[in-house]
Amino acid sequence: MNALTVHNIALIGFGEAGSILGGDLVKAGCQVAMYDILLDAAQTRAAMLEKAQGLGVVPKDTLAQAVTGADLVISAVTAASASVAASGAAAVMRPGQIFLDINSVAPSTKRAESAAVAAAGADYVEGAVMAAVPPQRLAVPILLAGRGQRSWPRPCGPSVWMRVRSRLRLAWRLRSRCAAAS
Image 1 (cartoon, rainbow, N blue to C red):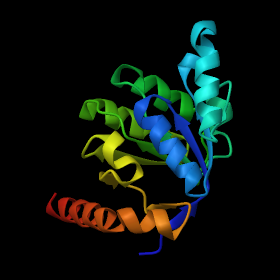
Image 2 (cartoon, rainbow, N blue to C red):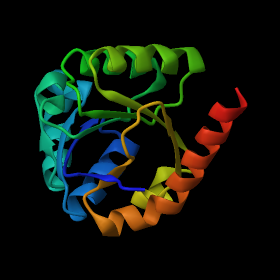
Image 3 (cartoon, helix red, strand yellow):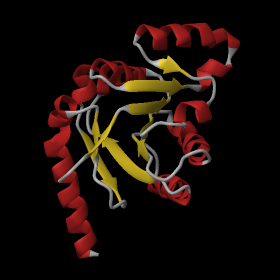
Image 4 (cartoon, rainbow, N blue to C red):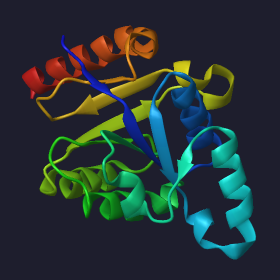
């Protein structure tokens, strides 16, 4: 399986999971930008800017600024904000970009998000985070599923890819088997 290597990553949501993934992806050699609604509030803006800059992640003032130019957009927001984040990203996404949703939301929400992203010509990938992010950090197992014909993304090159390749193959096989069974 040939994987697409991505270098420019946008994170929507910079709480616990988003900041851990963002910092680790920067250490792996990726260019990472972020947007979080906490940047919009005067009371939380300074702390959020300090957190991002301390990890080498570039904060953006709007969701559109974060998403524009990213190869991979990772949504790591609260369940209540997932639809708004996906529709906001879809409004500025273009063909060739990948939207990776790691939020825990209802299947109907995932389908609506997928439709919005697909309407922009981008690829939607659902990610089911299979364990807590903090102890395993970037090595946390994430089961991926999506309909696009593109190869799965290889974030920032072989070292990061090797950690998740076996999980991606498993996800691909499961998806293929499920599609064949239906």
